[in-house]
Image 1 (tube, rainbow over the protein chains, first blue to last red):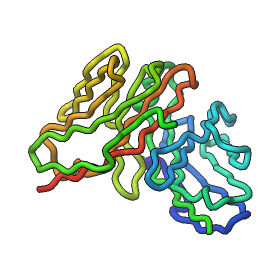
Image 2 (image 1 turned 90 degrees about the vertical axis):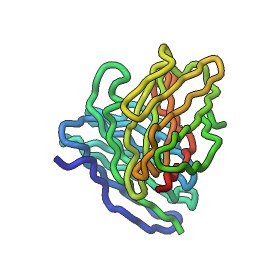
Image 3 (image 1 turned 180 degrees about the horizontal axis):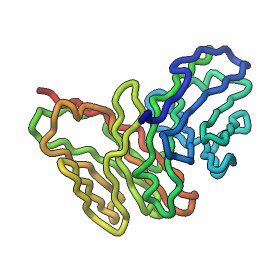
Image 4 (image 1 turned 45 degrees about the horizontal axis):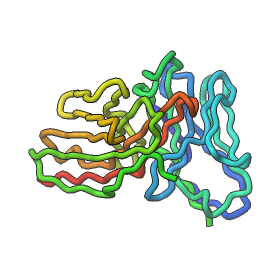
Length: 117
Length: 113
């Protein structure tokens, strides 16, 4: 059973470009969350997708958008890239459950390292 | 404004000894706390959690202690093993922010053989 997979593993872009990152959740999971982890920082919540809709959003500008497909996989899109967008982008999947126990069952992928030059 | 603080960027301990990782928080509304472990080139892995209605939770070699009055929690690893060498993140949630995880900066633990 594959866990959470992300592609690509590394990516180099230049300022102003657009990027799409992809995530496949763990088998059986239906919820996908995206995080940005800058160097030396903890992960910052970007947004969460459930039932193909954005359910929650962190403090990120509209340049950051996403999508969830019927098979529960997800994409993170970032437009007009800035140098400050350079970070490790983590995807986490979970199964929608009532209550807080879903955090215990949140599985993270290895991340996509984005470098903006 | 860092609501969850891990003031020690790194910690080094000898194999077999106790590792104590600390975490402080500023938001008294947090009601659930989690610890994650992260190896290089891997995503964070859930380790242990504690509800704000408890002051201790234990799982094998890992114990988390919560002191609400001091807004402080700690993770104890006993005995420490070389495979425990990783970055440990403290995270917190509360209902008021739709239960989004708020993460600390992490503490890098090195367990020396």
